Image 1 (cartoon, rainbow, N blue to C red):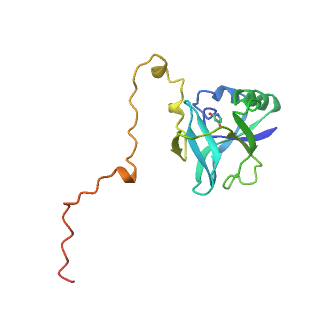
Image 2 (cartoon, rainbow, N blue to C red):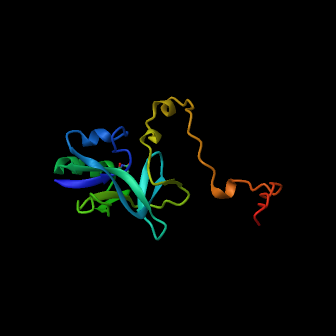
Image 3 (cartoon, rainbow, N blue to C red):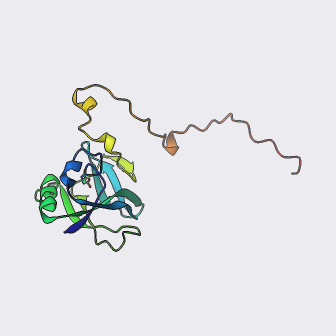
Length: 161
Ligand code: PCA
């Protein structure tokens, strides 16, 4: 048996969750704030951060050897797509000796997902398969995109000043 931390398509409701059929759900969890999450080709990739890491949300599962082997194949560990290695988690899972799938290729140009991958972004969304548009939640503007209005009135000085 092995404990894995899943943060992407393997989560409950995710495109590849069936790979965890019959395995034991141990609970939701978060990594230490030492990682970053990027959107690759419809699925996410976790990488170790050189500073500026976030606490990535996911799930802990206790899996048997057979399931682990199948998931290794799915994640392309032999072909260098992901690498399964120990991940540092926050309590109460900090002693779980969990491993996760680190993305092993370049994340250059990939969207930064922040601290979580919403499973509904999975590529197998039927709306996307039939080429229809589906509503996306708008991204919050980045700080640099929020216009500063130079004509905005300065606050009235208070009579106490
Ligand atoms: N599957 C694995 C790694 C990335 C992905 O989409 C997971 O869910 O953790």
